[in-house]
Amino acid sequence: MTQNNTEKINLLIVDDREENIVALEALLGRNNLNIISTTLPNEALRLCWESDIAIALVDVQMPGMDGFELVEILKNNPRTKDILIIFVTAISMDTKYAVKGLNTGAVDYLYKPLNPFVTYAKVDSFIQFVRNQRALKKQNRELEAFQKELIEAKELAEQGKRIKENFLANMSHEIRTPINGIIGIATLLNNTVLTAEQQEMIKLLEISSQSLLGVINDILDLSKIEAGKFKISRTKINLAKNCQSIINLLKIRAREKGLNLIFELDKDLPELVMADSLRLNQILMNLIANAIKFTTSGSVTLKVKVINRKGNTIQIRFSIIDTGIGIAKENIDKVFEIFEQADEQTTIKFGGTGLGLSIVKNLAKLKGGILEVSSEENKGSTFSFINWYEEVESEKIIPPVTPVEFLPFEQVKILVAEDNTINQFLIAKILKNWNIEIELAENGQEAIDLLSKNDYNLILMDTFMPIMNGLDAIKLIRKGYAPGKENIPIITFSAAVMEEDKKTAIDAGADDILSKPFEMEVLYKKIKLFVEGSHS
Image (tube, rainbow, N blue to C red; front, side, top):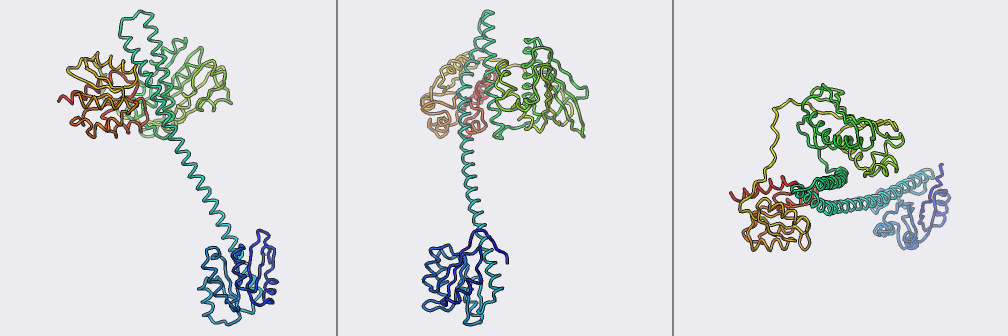
């Protein structure tokens, strides 16, 4: 018979005759079993209470308390109810006793004289059952502990995500708000009489502020991609014109470094395809700007080639080839990591955040495309983006949209709620140039109090303000804080760019949202839309 040397199981023998106990101990004795015995039922109760008894062999006929009564007490106690009870009897082989024993809670009923082989085998099977049961309970406890850890980890992750999103929203507001002021004032200055030197300084100011805005947008783009909130929106686009526009935008930067910026277009490229032009532009702009940045002499080439066709879909490779510094083989994967560049010397010499290629990698994955790179130190690099596109039929050319003419408004009064002094000056200057009468409020409470006393055609409401923020002020207006003015058009100014922030503003009751920094043309169009509606 096999012996199991794992953790011992406690087995209790309860019999009023000592010789029966000795016989059972001799029969059942083994290394994996710890046998405890008693001739007294009350002593058996104490042993079961104090010891970890797994199996009990209980004689039915005992003085004072019979086996049925003993087992009934054990089964009614939560601490001892799981003990496996095997009744042992010599009184009768009548089925009614076996049924009574099993109804009491026993798992088996053995008759004396005991068959040693059957008794040994049955006890052995119950030992194995106990082991399996205990192993299962242990696994359940471990699983419960693991589930608890997972829940805690999930809660921590969600808390971290909330903290990150709040930080990004605050960072976006705190940085984009002053950038809005810088860009806006630079635009206003550019419309005044300036010397050539001043014009050059304004130009440098605009380039620097746009560069800073680009870094902020890169960080926010990465956060949106990581949060799964970055959406791909495909429309009909002219790839050739799209790529040419990118080349035109970056030509000046290449020319400043004495580089040739070359554009090679496959003659088989269709005129129109379905694509997300904004995200494709981000990929190509980042890759070409990166190539120009790390190329000191020679050229940078954008090569667009059709490499495969299936029905009305085509596979296109966009290759950006440069004659720059190149990348060592061991550093190629590294350049796609967030805030990483090939090495420290690259960062020192060329600068930058290391965000561009990471965004390209994430966007390529999001668009279902492939990003490839080959490079040789001091000879140059080739970055390629490959993706499938649906070819569509050509359409009539839509004439370009003529720029907005900023005609003065007549009898328009706007309430501007904005706490930032520079933005107050900027917005006031812009609106006054459009012949709009304005009144300024520095927080939400001041805005709703002014609305109660005065009439306005429109409210421009900043989202983040002290004392009372813009969203709370909008909610109070919509609830009737200023009676009769519940439906006044409200446009929110917001430096936050997360989709949740925009949805929150609309849910609060805003009619429209204007992101900071804003373009004057966009602001003019929005004011015109709502003011003309209020006059009709």
